[in-house]
Length: 288
Image (cartoon, rainbow, N blue to C red; front, top):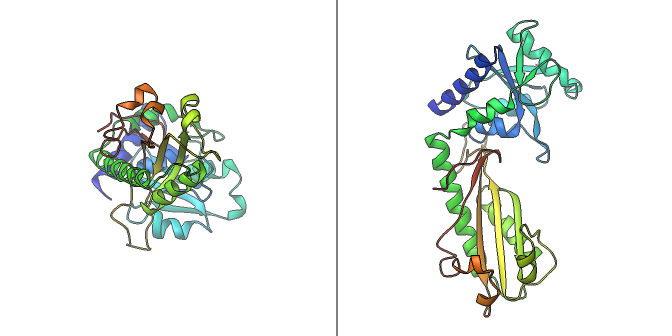
């Protein structure tokens, strides 16, 4: 277990102590990605919670609670090397929200008070305290965030260089999403707005419009850890944060079409970036 993971476990344990709890159950993707620096508990990425829960005890012990189908992969790949003790149960019980609570009390003691980041029967929701625990990013968090932000910004710049007036917004969005995947990142939000749509809408979801004078592209991407197998990894793996970047590409007559507040970006649109980051999309840090 690395020092960064140990520090974050200690923060969760402090949340438990402060609330007089014996442990905290984590189910939200944002909390598990933060705690493990980018590892995931989800199969269905449209859900906020995943198929596994992590239990962090106030005394420092840690467990992974999952059904028998998912446990082997979690131990071999997602949680490899982090020292979580497995607590397995039949997959037929996976939809019972009280199942994880019973399993946690079996490990920590019958009737003990437990916290959770998600409404679970017989637990105290401590999401607000966990959000404060996530708020101070570690040196590793910041370094990984900056790397993702830089790579996302460069990728958007390269996309913009290849654009020509007449390209459809949806085709541009597809190129951006392909570029994010090539960076081993998952596109969370992809915006493309051109001409009148850019003037009218703050968050232009890509449409069938073909751009003429100016187009804005924006990406919010998340990079998690995806091992090649036991012991395998990639140098870009393990972020647990989301980074956002934006670019504008004016056409031949695009300067007059740019909103006034954005014209200053024209000259350096490929070399400067504006980024934001969040831990699971919730906690802001100053841009680097």
